[in-house]
Length: 363
Image (cartoon, rainbow, N blue to C red; front, side, top):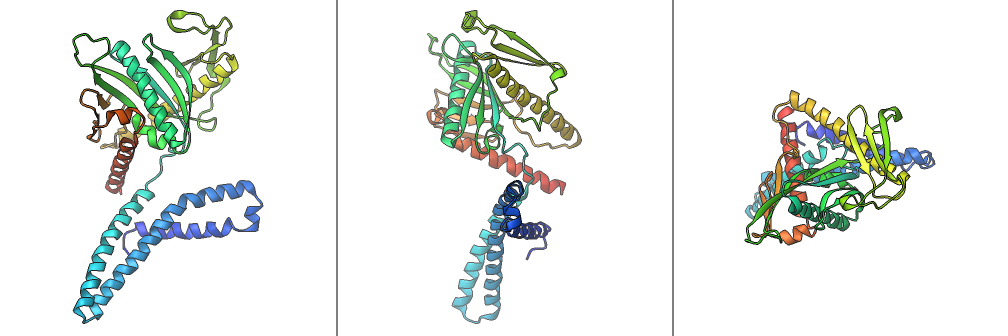
C-alpha cells in the first residue's frame, strides 16, 4: 500500500460506503423514504470512487505478486513474464491513481444544476444577430442529443431572422457541469449574404451560462422587487397584445432588471422573469465569492471570463478554434449542428487538471 495520505482518505471513504450499504438495506431505513433517499444519494456519490479504489487495490496486489515471483523464482522465462506483467500493471496503476485524484477533487456544487443560457448579439449588426440565432440552435441541438429540455424564456428577433437576444432554460442531468465553460465571447468570421465584394467580416455574440438558482439558494424578499406591467410588442414596436401581460421586474438592492413578454399570461411571464432574476442574483453572489478568493490567492484558475474571446468560428476555412485550450476542429458544420462534445469534453478535462494541479500546490 502507498504511504500517500490520499489512500488514508480512500480507506475512510470505503469504510463509509460499506456502512451506507448496510444502512440502506436495513428495514428501519427502508421504511423512512426521506432518510433512504438521502443515504442512497450519498451512497451513489461514493460508489464510483470505491469501485475505482478497489480496482487500484487489485492491481497493486498483482504488482506485488509479480515482484515476489521475480525474487523467488530461478526460472528465467518465468521471471521475464513476471517482469512484463509488473510493468503493464504499474502503468495501469498510475492511470488509476490519476483517476482517483480527479474523483477526490471537491465537486462544484453547481454541477448538477439546470441552467439559464443568455445569448446576445455583439459587434456586427444583423450578421451578429444571425450568428446569435445560430449559436442558440447549436446549443439546442446539443441539448437534444443529451436528452435535455430547452425552454425559451425571452427572445428578441432581428429583422433578418436572427436573434438580438435570446434567454432560455436548459434542464437535465449535469447541464451546468457540461456547459459552464461556454460563457464568453464567441466570434464568427465569414462572408455575409449581403456582402457584394466577397469580403470576410468578423462579428461576435456573447454567451452567459448561469446555474439556475432555487428558493434555497437565493431568497428574494417581496419588498426588494418592483413589478411593472405593460403591453407586449413585436419587432419594430408593433403591438401584439393589447392587455398588460408583459412584466418588468426590478430588483431594487442590486439594480438588476428583467423583462418578460413571450407569454400571453402575466402570471407566466412573471414566473419566467423570476427564474431569470434568481439565476442572475445567484451568479452575482457566486462572482463576489470568486473575487474574494481571487484576491487572496494568486494563480487563480480562470474559468472563461466573458470579456475574453473564447472561440472563433471561421466559415471560409471550415474550422472552429477554442483559444483557451488551443483546440481546432475542421468540422464547423458538425459543430454548428450541435456536435459540441469534442470541445465540452476537452474543456472539462483541461480545467479539472488545472484544479488538480492547484490542489497539489496548495497541499
